Length: 234
Length: 351
Image (tube, rainbow over all chains, first blue to last red; front, side, top):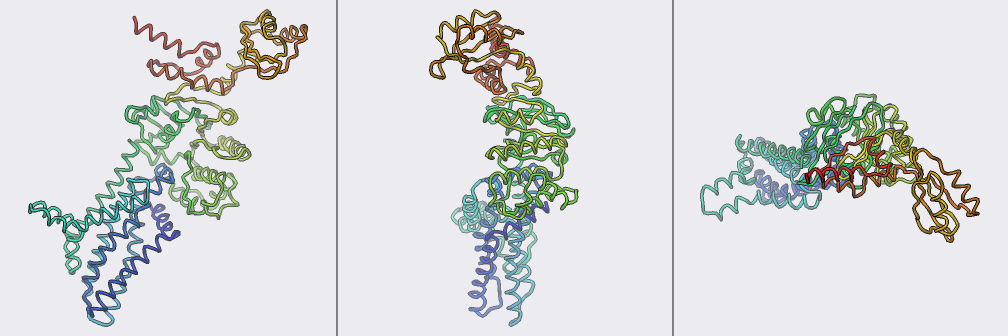
C-alpha cells in the first residue's frame, strides 16, 4: 500500500496536476479570505469555510479523475492487480495520496487563521473545527471521486461525472424543498453535504456529522474495492 | 510448478476459455500457441489472478491463486500483452516502484542493476519511459516481470512489435531465463515457439487442441513422406510417369508456379524413400527438376490444421477429443480426428 501511496503522490507532483490543484486551493482560499474577512473587517471565518466547500466540489473531481481511469487506459492496473497487494491496499494507497494533496491545499486556511489571530481576537477552536470538518468533507468527496474514476476509462468523463454528482449532493438540500413530503425532505437533507457542514462552519463539532462523512468515505472505498473485485469476475 | 485444471471463463454465454487443463514442471519453457482471439491472454490473465475463472483452478507452486492470491502472486512475474508502464516515470523510478510493490526482500540496488544488465536497459535507466522506443519499453516490461526473482514467468507475446534483431535478443534472453525460471510464453508466431520452447500447447476458440513436446512433434513429422517437386515437362506425361514409380501412393497436381513447369505433390507409402527412383525416372526422360521440397508438415501446417474450421465443427458436435500425440499422428496420417469423432457421435445420436 505504501508503494502505491508514494507513487501516486509523486505522480501528482511530477505532472502539473498537483501544483494546479494546490494553486487553485490557495487562490480561491485567498480570494474568499479577502472578500469575506478583510473587506468586511471581521475575524469570523465561518462564511469563508462555507464558500470553500463549494469550491472543493469542483476541485476534488479533478484531483481524483485519473486515479483508476488512467490505470485502466494504460493497462497499468494489470501490474497492480497481479502484484501481491490486496485490493483494499491499492484503493487505500490512492485514497490517502489524494487526501494528502487535498490536505496540503487545505493547509493554507490555517495560514489565514494565523493572519487573523495576529491582528484580532479569533476563536481558535472554530478554525480548528472547520479545518477538521473540511478534511472530513474532502475524505468523503475523494472516496466518491475515486469510485467514479473506477467506473470509466476516460479521465474527462470521470471529472465531469464527479462534478455533476458532487454538485448534486451539494445542492440537494435546495432541491428537497421542491418535494412537499416532509419525510423525503428529511432523508434528502440528511445526505446533503452542505447541510451537514453547517454545524462545522459555526464551530459546532457534532459527532454525528463527523461520523456521516467518515462513513461515506469508508462506504465508497469499500464500493471501489468491490468494483475491482467484480470486474475480475465479469 | 503450475497446475491448471478445468479452467473455464465465460462472458455471458460465450466461452473465452473452455475447460483447459495442463501442468508445467519446474524449469520448463512452455509455448502457448493459438490464433488471435483464441483465449491465450484470457488464460494468462487467469493464471496471474488478474481475472477470475468461472470454473476450475490454478495452482502456482501448490498455492491456489484464488484462495491465497497474495502468496501465489509472489511467485509470478507477469508481462502482459501491453507492458504495464507508467509513462511519466523514469525507468529507475518505475523499477523501484515495482520493487516496493512486490515487497521484494533482495538487496535493492544490486538486484535492480542485475536485472537492467540482463535485459540491457542500463543505458536508459534514468530516462522517462514515455520517450523510450517500443523495443526498450518491452524490455522495461520484461525487467518489471523479473523484479523479485519470481519462480514463474508468464510472458504474453513478448516479441510483438520488435525489430528482427530485438526479437532474436529477447528470444535468447527468454531461453537464458528458462534455465532458472519456469516460463510460459504465448505467441502466434510459430518459429518463435519452435526456437524457444521445449513444450507446446495449442489452443483455439478457448479449447485446448494439442499438448505435446517439440521433440515429439518433430518425430511425428519425420515419419511422413511427402515431396513437392517442380518439374519442367509436359504435365500429363510427367504425372503418369511419376505415378508409375513403385512406392508412390498419390500424386497431386499443384498447377504452374513458374513458367514452363508444373508442381506436383508426391505422397509415398509409409517407410519408403522414393527420391532416388524419382530422380532416375525424371533423368531418363530429360525433365529437369527445378525445385524439390520435402513437403513435410511444419508446425505451421499442424497449427493451421488444428485451428481450422474442423475444430469449430468439433465444438458444435460437442465432441470431446483427447489431446496428445494421437492427434498429430492421425492428422499426419491424413485422417482428421475431429471429423472421425464427429461422425462417430452423429452415428451414436442417430442410434
